[in-house]
Every structure is written in structure tokens, then in C-alpha cells.
Length: 455
Image (cartoon, rainbow, N blue to C red; front, side, top):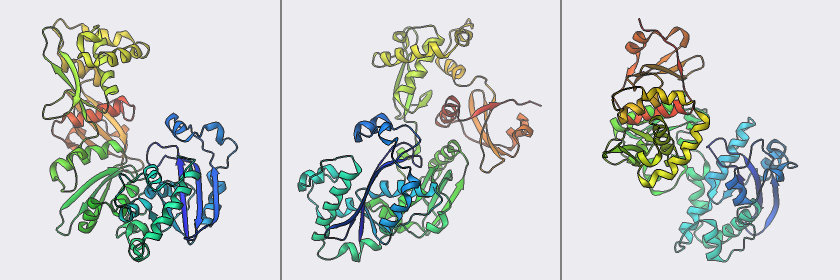
């Protein structure tokens, strides 16, 4: 029996998505024998892009049942059945998360119709559900709604089962880790659902062949072993051991991951794995004030790295305000409009005194000096973050406006002696990228400064 499922969700950060609609059709291989379709009430706003995509608004969910009210029905209709979905990793992961929030471990054997469609329908231009429906003339009058997409998936499954004359699905696919949801390391990582940290995958020679980070370690590691693309399968064959290092904070995980990727150069990581900040702020010499550019990192070194153009515009807006200059005077023409918009927002958020202080120097202020003043309030700082365990904290040390090291402490109030912390800290080489990560976290109020003393 097959439980063909489609879910519409709020989207957002992994582990925080919520189901807003679910449809389940119990299919015996020939006909639908049972079904369950329901909107689901959530305690959060539905993002506008989800509303536009699905047509589901928050007002539509007011009288809908909450997930815990339909959980028993979902368990009953899927019990002793194979969980089927188009891109099952999405639907299965979110459904498992909802049950995890209720304290229930939801486990089913899973079929993903995407790789099966690639196998039995090799000549299609693409394998999204919309393309498949168009190519096979499967009617779907409710696209991006759970009911319509699940019904279309039932029809697709029927076609796939008909084409599977060699019984590949029953004989091979359902025995793969991607279908069982279990792999060699499932037991080892089962308690890491909401754990933050870095993980290392080793081969038989003890070499690290992949490094990753996550604030949902179990979910992230599972993906490596439950995927069936070519790279994932190759990795699965080589992995013989896993090590996890809990960090307590995503910033610390990002710092460790970046350092280790550069040091160990694991064969299965790609160059882009090293960077979550992929744009840099650069200066271009000019007859007047240096002009600022925001562009992708290549081989040159930026003064600061940012996540997006908007974030870059914000920094340029702060610089222009600090210099009491127009955006036209500091930014390349392609960036001026973005800087102007952000500059207007700054007028409401900052007191002008902060920026006037930067202009008291009689000497011309250099670009790097401006950024230093805007990134860190003081040249020497201790910043506090969540620690690895309850009752501990991670401290980041800033000296001469640079991130120089980190240390784990039990009680922050008793560990604020600068000289002692500097001796005990794990030092890092000067890095614009790591410094930018810390600056971003400080700017986003994810870490905060604490008072300290110098002996």
C-alpha cells in the first residue's frame, strides 16, 4: 500500500517550517482506497511568497485544526504503508519535524518519485512535477496545493509502477537507505536533531573527506546518506566513520568549519562550501574620495565581506553618513540607488553624534579606518556567545578591530580578565572572512559585548 503525500508549508529556516496543508491518498497500486486532506492552523505568519504560490492566507487557517489534532489520523492512514512524495526529502523531513515537536518519532519507508521518474522516463526535459504533468498530460487543476499535487503524484506513481516490469522498485529501491530512512550512522546521530555544530566524515584511511556545519545536525547528516545523486552515492561508499563537534552556536560552527576546510581540504567539499559571505566591499582609487564597490570575491582581498547586496548597501550608507557625503560621491554608479535607500533608513535609526565623532580627526580618514569605527564600537572588545553546554559561554576576543581568538568559559562574570583570556584563548590567524562573520553576528545582535578589565 502506498500513502501518497503532498505538503504545503510556511518555508523558512530548516527545522522551523510549519505545515499549512496536507493531503494523503492511500493507493493500492490500482486505485485510491482512502484519503485525508486538511488545512493546518499555525501560530506564525505565512510569508507573502507562500501566499502567492499556494493561494493560502492566514485567514484561511483560522478554523483549521492544529497539527496535534490531526496527528493521529496521519499515523493511522500511513501505518504499514510506503510514504510516497515528489521530492520526498522535503515532505518527509517537515512531517517528521512536526511529529518530533509532539514527542513522537515518525518513521516510514519512503519513495521519492523524482529519481524513479529519471530512471523510467529518461527523455523528459526536467523532472519537476509541473513539467512531468505537462509531458505526460497528467491533469492538475490545483497546482501548488496539497490536494492537486498529491493526486498528480498518484497518477505518476501509477505510470511508474506500470513501467517497472523488472520490479526494480520492490527489489532494489525499497532496500536503499533513501527508502528505509536508515543508514549505518542513524543510531549514532539520532539525538542530534536540534544540535548545533560541525561534523566530519572519514574514509577507511582516517582521512576527512567532508566537513559540514548545521543547527540541525541529524537532518543535515541524514541528507548525505539518504540522497541518491551521483556525488552522494560516491560519498556513501567511502564514509567509514563520523565525528561531531558540538558548538552551541552557529557562528562558532561557521568559524570552525571555515578553518578546517582551509586546513584539511576534504575531497568532497566544493570551494563555495568555505563561504556563506560571498560578496566583498572594495575601494577603488579616485581623484577625490575612494569609490566603493560591492562584488563577488575572486583573488583580491576586500575590506569586509557581506551576505547580500542589500547588506553591502547598508554599510556604504553608513560610510557616506559618517563622511557627511552623498551616495553619489562614494559609490560606483551601479550602487548609488541602493545606497541612497539605505541612507534614508539610517536617518531614523542612528543619532548623528555617532557619525560626527568620526569627522573630528584633522587627517583624512582612510577607508579602513572608517570601517573599523563602524564595525566595532571599541578597538578592544570581548563578545559573548552561547556555549557548548548549558552554563558555558564562548567568548570572542577583538584587538585592534580584529577578531584574534576565542575561548570557552564556565561563568562569564568570572572570566573577564583580558590578559588571562588572551593566554587561554585559541588564537586564529588574521582573516577578513572570519572577522566579517563576527561583525555580522554583532550587527545582527546574535552576540553582545561584555565589560572586562585589563590587568
